[in-house]
Image (cartoon, rainbow, N blue to C red; front, top):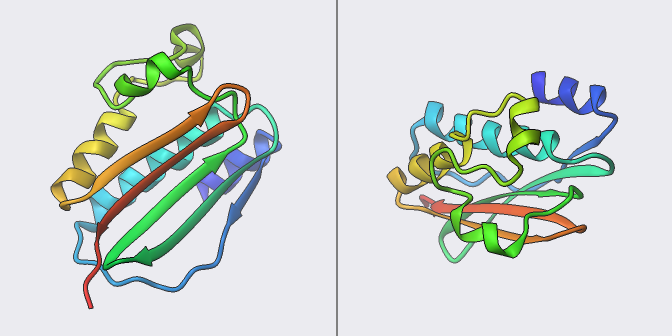
Length: 137
């Protein structure tokens, strides 16, 4: 779809890692929007390499993870990336068409599902965004 086309245009490898289906009770629209925002961000801020998407389940929680080989996020910005309108690289995010709302929307949507969002990033190495929500069995 649109994300795969965006990856092709950016000459990035978009990899969907196979994982077992995990049943969740969720608002499909909000969850889809959160996933799309995370993948779209990874594609926007990765100059070369890949964006990898994985899903799974651990300890009764479904998890979704996006790992990129982008420029990474400076440590001082990590605590604020989920705030509304916070931009790590202001000039670049404006040039890429960002509103500064994407990650705030992700955090809100995952919070509504009783979940958590985490970020691990190192400048020059890339970023991993991960959320977990309760799985249903």
